[in-house]
Image (cartoon, rainbow, N blue to C red):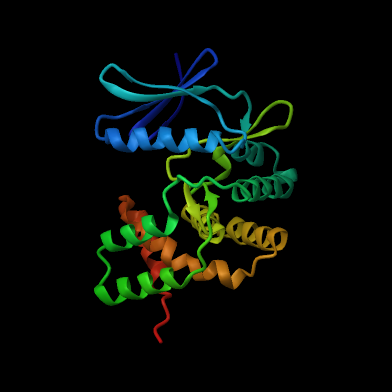
Length: 246
């Protein structure tokens, strides 16, 4: 087995035609099983994703085993081939719109998850109330939302097919909330200019008003701020300050 990626609490290995994601002990069993269940539900939509093969213990740690998809991430392609950057960003938006065209009625509802996360923040009661109210007022949709879509989660195979990985945060809900999340991910990675360009492309291709996605930004930022990293929390909470009181 060779290590192909590492992030906080997770190590990803390649073993022949298998991709093995091994979680550290602090990950809850329910969280890992939920990620596997999300992925199985997304498989059923027919989207191009690596199929789940098994969930098992390896040396006392939980692991999710999926097919290994040969290829390069869109993030790598963008870095290696900057001349075609815009083309790759358009392809990324096309992939996200394809995700949003799907339905999966058993996924967690995005609004339920966000309401729970806003309640978990240490924001003051007035701000929490404003965020809950704004969230309730947003149109209810039931589109598949990835919840953590970034160019590093899209693999392009040698024959040009796009595969989407890492479905731990998948929900069903409003696509614009998913777009707000991706926009904030670009910003978190210090790529504000790309975030702006991404938003422009998405709004144009999907005929969505930019102001509508911007209304989601404080809600999404607040719900993401409970995730942990102090420097990220500070950045995300700065977005929450844009709540405009009546």
